[in-house]
Amino acid sequence: MTRLALALAAALAASPVFAADAPVALRCGKLFDARSGKVLGPHTVLVRDGKIEGVVAGTAAEAAAGRETVDLGGHTCTPGWTDLHVHLGSQSGPQSYSEGFRLDEVDFAFRSVGYAKKTLLAGFTSVRDLGGEIAPHLRDAINQGLVDGPRIWAAGKSIATTGGHADPTNGWNDMLSHLIGPPGPTEGVINSVDDARQAVRQRYKDGSDVIKITATGGVLSYAKSGDAPQFTVDEVKAVVETAKDYGYKVAAHAHGEEGMRRAVLGGVTSIEHGTYMSDEVMRLMKQHGTWYVPTIYAGRFVADKAKIDGYFPEVVRPKAQRIGALIQDTAARAYQHGVKIAFGTDMGVGPHGDNAREFVYMVEAGIPAAAALQAATIRAAEVLGVDDQGVIEAGKRADVVAVPGDPVADIARVLEVAFVMKDGRIYKRP
Image (cartoon, rainbow, N blue to C red; front, side, top):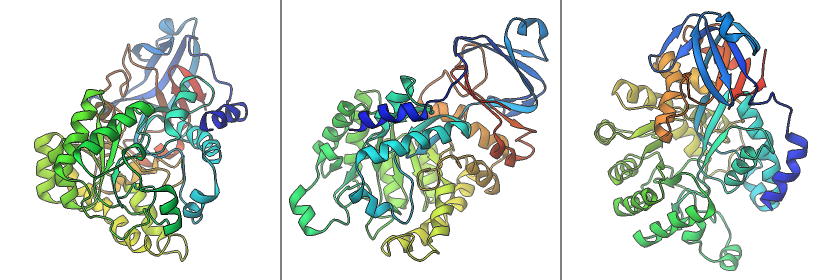
């Protein structure tokens, strides 16, 4: 049904774009060099067949001859941004918990098409969708050119333990629970090392690109604890080792200290959220090379919405108030301790298309603007394990975003995206 919904939505959502094989010259007033973190002067970016053909200092009139020229003077060009933590199949609101019972996959699929386009037009040419059965199908529809959206690394169904953050039956009454039966590895719920292996293999069968585990409780799940550890070290290791067989990296949702410690020792690639991250956990992350994706936006969003009566169920509200408000401070400490930080928002918790506000929150936490931009470009590519994006260099994907002024001098400029190119196609221009 999801595939059908996406095919139908394509007729409504697809928009005309400029052909990816047309040679283009982008005349940038400034250029952000993601490797050095420096803003350079005027450069011309030459694009052909979806790739960056060359990068030339100045206006490069001769090199640009015979190409469609896009004047981005007065703008800074950066590599396309990557959000490493989104959920394109949903968006939270007061009705979110009941909609899971009232709506069909088709309804969520239609919504995801709009969310994907908003994300792309906000400057995010790639995302890692960490949990949602719609995402692999949406990825395929975007790759086929049926709908507009970012390049997607899709986790599919998150892997949880019984009663854990991604147990799909949390909050169900006895009648429903008895009718459906307890979820198992096929549904992404494990309780042993063997279950863990089976769950990863099922994600492979389902077409996932990355594995996500919920190593601790979570804020928005219908359960009391937001930070209790929910996997053993052996279970995490089983997930990671099996994931390696398929070339997958593993992202771990984790708020509590002990759950993070187990996830790091188990070999995960990244810790997501990391609210109660201790100095000891930071030391372990540096030792093991584990990345941190803070998702400050989500923390601030849920803390704010928890003040509104009825926005969250009462079992969720205290967690949102307590945990959400802490993430920005954790990100500040992690940066000061030298933990490797990459960009992610947990968008879907907040409204899609507002992803760039995370840059502003990162800078408020004391992370330099250049480092924040690197987190969403070259560092994000490192987390994904790819080397064909994240920088504006010859031979790389032609993913380019332009904002007015200089975002390193004024990070709020990221909220004014004027130009978006993905794989050489122009989706937005001044």
